[in-house]
Amino acid sequence: MTTLYGIPNCDTIKKARRWLDDNGIEYRFHDYRLDGITQKQLKEWSDELGWENLLNRRGTTWRKLDETERECINKTRAIALMVAQPAMIKRPLLETGLDSGQKKLLGFNADDYKKLLLKS
Image (cartoon, rainbow, N blue to C red):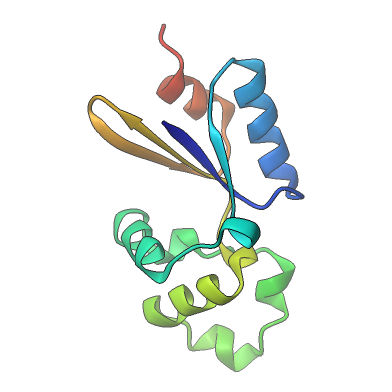
């Protein structure tokens, strides 16, 4: 099963969803705001992908934080912030279960999606 994690009004999510739909890929959309996200899941993703990669530092939610809060960020604080404010999670995160195990892609790149999801 393929799951796309994000928030629906994000432009990058819209691009990823359009690509998946156009290529006939079945997926489930997990809306962070409606479906939630757990600290455990974020820790697992952070261990695999790196919390620095998972934390969206380009969004307005990050920029609204106090400067001292941004400067003192570490893995534990980043995970707590992402649980409290899911818009701080870089998006999209695509997770697919294949025969060779679970694969994850962070962000959207059509070529990466094609390599992972389409059989040549």
